Length: 148
Image (cartoon, rainbow, N blue to C red):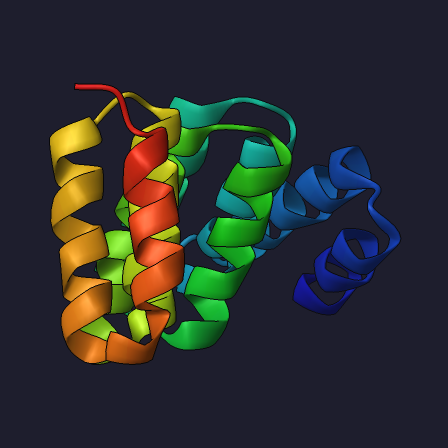
């Protein structure tokens, strides 16, 4: 069932993905991957709270929800559905994986700016500058776009 859910994810048929993930759970409730893919499908179906809940259950069942691959899937879903608040949380988790990755901080700064968290956006931009001094011109340009 998971293979079929993944196929539907690739095909962008999120309703079918949802159905296969639910069948997977009916077959084995304890399988964290079933919950993870159900969560991803729910995000694409704009059931954000339910999606987040399923991803949390997946983690409790031992599924690695905070690996780069898992975070990539979550980030893609939240970004495509324009749920920037939850996307910010995903980028916070990326940073836990690799604090020294300037791109993660840059992306988080941008997402913070989208949700009106301007002070947090500035803080992340300053971290980008620390990690990647050659980005000074881009960081300065970004900072000028933020209201006070």
